[in-house]
Length: 75
Image (cartoon, rainbow, N blue to C red):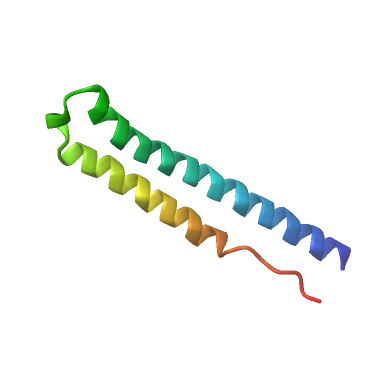
């Protein structure tokens, strides 16, 4: 029983690490989409800004979805 619990704990930690990784990349892309036009021209906000922002939002949403793959210990 302890071995099964250890496997579940290891699986959950790996899921949390991967989800955190995708979340960090997604938030970085969103930050890039916001800060890039501020450092350049406000006129340069265009398709690329929208692309970076949407990509970041998608990665953030995928990170939330991956957290749903965590397992519970059977009692």
